[in-house]
Image (tube, rainbow, N blue to C red; front, side, top):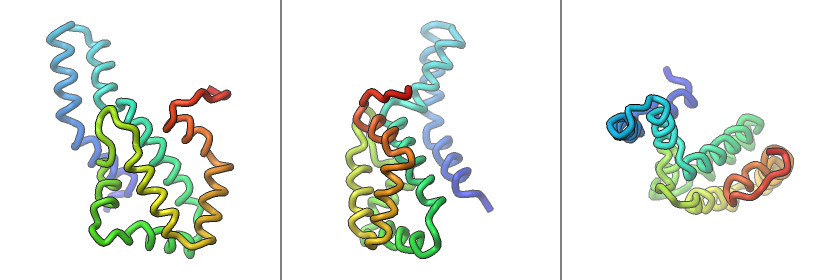
Length: 149
C-alpha cells in the first residue's frame, strides 16, 4: 500500500522525468556546468505554473487534514460529483495547467467544488482560507507582494 501523498509524488516524478532528463542533457551539452544543469532541472520540475499549483494543492491538503468525518464526506461527494470525471482526474494527475498559464482552470474547479458543498463545508472552507494560509495562496496565484516574504 502506498501513502496518497507519496503516491502522488511518485506519479509526478515519473510524469516529469523526461522533461528533467532533457533539461539536464541540453544544459550539460551547452555549458558542461553541473550547477547550471541542476538549475535547469529545478526549472523543469518547478516552473512558475507548477509552483502555483503546488501552493493550491498544499492549501487544499492542509484544509482536508483538519476536516471532521462529516465535512470530509461532504467534500469528497462534491469533489467526485463531476459526471464526466474529467476535472477531478486532471486535478489528481497534476494536469490542469499548461506551461506559462495561470491556474485558472484549477481555480475554477475549486470554486465549483465550493459551490457544490454544504453550507457547513462552505463556512469551514471560508474560515480556513481567511485564517490558515489564504494570503500566501493569493500571493502565489496573483503574484502579489507579501509583507512576510
